[in-house]
Each structure stands twice: as structure tokens, then as C-alpha cells.
Length: 140
Image (cartoon, rainbow, N blue to C red):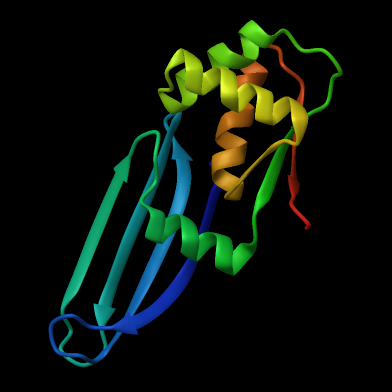
């Protein structure tokens, strides 16, 4: 299983105390998934949530990007078949044809950037279509 997580602290919405959350993103049963659970240190209010789908909630993405930095997905062959790249992106992210075409062009030009789990998830789909890719820690 590919996974990435971090701890986040914030203010409890219930009592104003300190809330600690464990958040993460992972690939499970072939799906991009995420979860969040936490507890307030003062009032002990707690929660646990988990879901999956093509788009992770932005607060989870941003926390992971801040904690671990972005990863970059790049092509490792010069001329992959565009149709295969678009098919893989459409399946992975439930994109329209136009959206898949734009993402494929971005991948070919400069690569795609996101969380490590998001880029590994796309890499899995691309490799299933025999498209050679690599995932690297992104340095700007």
C-alpha cells in the first residue's frame, strides 16, 4: 500500500481547545483514498472519516504538500502514445476528453505535480497502459 500522512493541530470548533488530527492519503484496493481522525485535548470531542474518489479534499492535500513537499510525475520515454496517456488519465481521474488532453500535454511538457500518493496513483494507471513514467520528489 502506498501511503502518506501527517499530524495537524488546530483549534477545536466545539470548545476552542487544541485539536490534533492525523490525516493521510493512500491507495487501497486500486482507489485513491484519504482519511482524517482526531481528538480535542480539552473536551475530548473526536471524529474519524475516510473516503475515496478521484479528488482528495483540498485541506488534506495542502497539509500533505506542506509536510512532505510535492512530487512530480514525468514521462521517461520520448514519444509515448498520446491516446494511451489520455486513457490512463481519464480512468484515474474521471476526466473529460478535453481535460485529459490538457493534462497529457502538461505531463509531456513539464510533468504533473501533486502529493506523492496522487502521483503514484497516476503512475500505476499509466504503467498499466505501458506508458513509462517516474515519480520524483519535486524540487523547484
